[in-house]
Image (cartoon, rainbow, N blue to C red):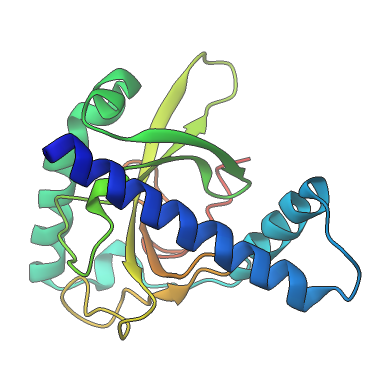
Length: 192
């Protein structure tokens, strides 16, 4: 039963993502869009969404409550430095790499209306020059965009953004790789 429910959730999320991407591609071009063009359109939309910083707040500007929540997120995701552990817990490599963010591993079962610092819906991995393998860099939180922007972490430092062409609100927390532009800024210049 649990596997069936998980399959239904995965199917629904994929349908929403594909439908949203198709609508975005259709709206951005009057001509027919092929699969290759759709992929390019999706990547361009994601790049635009992540080009502006969500927050330039540094770690020193965060409240004690926010620091405690970030510490909880670090403790909960520490085991995912090993990608095999992430995959064992349901995170799937969706073959999406975005410069400034990295490789996206999504746990579709976690995408719901709930924000929990200890259960990020996406793990972001980066390649480090001169080293082999992927290194855990950040946690990304997703909430369906049919809901209002979530409160998220305590305080006003985390600014959620819509994630076109996907129907979600998103927030990156750079808890494993320092982001000189701010812990909650979408793009990290240290991720090629």
